[in-house]
Amino acid sequence: GAGVSQSPSNKVTEKGKDVELRCDPISGHTALYWYRQSLGQGLEFLIYFQGNSAPDKSGLPSDRFSAERTGGSVSTLTIQRTQQEDSAVYLCASSPQPGGYNEQFFGPGTRLTVL
Amino acid sequence: QKEVEQDPGPLSVPEGAIVSLNCTYSNSAFQYFMWYRQYSRKGPELLMYTYSSGNKEDGRFTAQVDKSSKYISLFIRDSQPSDSATYLCAMSMNTGFQKLVFGTGTRLLVSP
Image 1 (tube, rainbow over the protein chains, first blue to last red):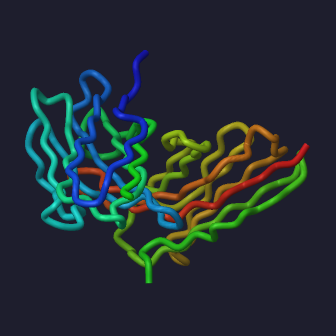
Image 2: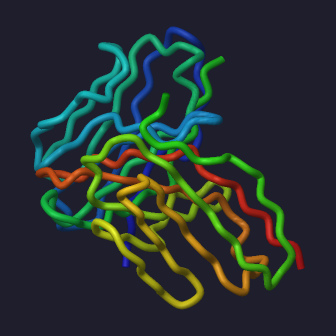
């Protein structure tokens, strides 16, 4: 069956430009998560969606980062005025429900390079 | 200091060896403990998860959690070259949703 998909797989941009990263979760999964994986760092939590609402945005590193989810499905992570320190792999995960333990299924990630 | 500490490696072993991977953590509120495997340029995939303390076995893999020491381990028996990957430990609290806190990952290389 189809897993979590992300696009683009790679994105190279210039410092100061805006970028949009897309995540298509597994159909029927209500919970969606964004993480960032930087070189030498573990995955860092960015934001969590339950349906279309985001009860926890505590991991977003600055107000240049925002995310939305529409129709309880696709999510977009937007980074405005990109900086070189934003270079990382951005990973999206989805799970069937938020409560208790539910496996998070990860997409392949978007590798962002800011020149 | 990070909430979850993990030796980045690389850890190099010959095929057939027993591999021990470990993480320590500082937050006693963690209740769920997971091990993910990540191949190069791929997303992490769940290997095993454990709730609270104890051991769990799945084929060649055994996960152990010692909450009193805040220490978790993953053992791989009869390691294979296909096990070469980065292994990430992850943890979460027993709250309304699963905000995972990850270690940095240990890179494992199994040589034929």
